[in-house]
Amino acid sequence: MSDLKYKYIGAPSICLIEECGELIQAIAKGERFGWYNHHPDRSFTNLYELQAEWKDVKEAYDKLINSIVANTALHVDKKGK
Image (cartoon, rainbow, N blue to C red; front, top):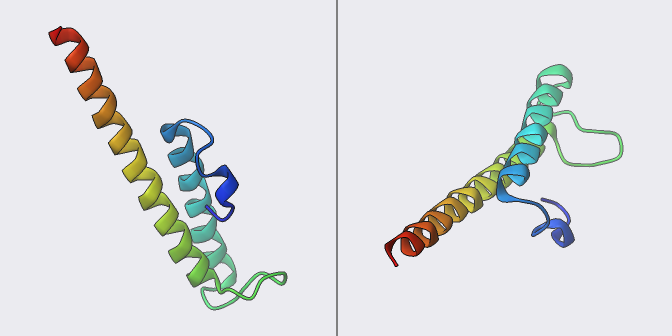
């Protein structure tokens, strides 16, 4: 998630799907062009990009899990009343 203005846009599941797509792209770029190579417009290596995307995936995953747990707790509370 490079732009913070998009951090809270979209359902947590959709955010995780998008981040997984970016992770897949980072893996493909590293395998195709080399892990220590970089995009001509950026100075970060493909390995760095992979690590950054992995961090974003982990954050999106945690958000999804927290959302599921919170919604499940709300659902259970409503049923109990």
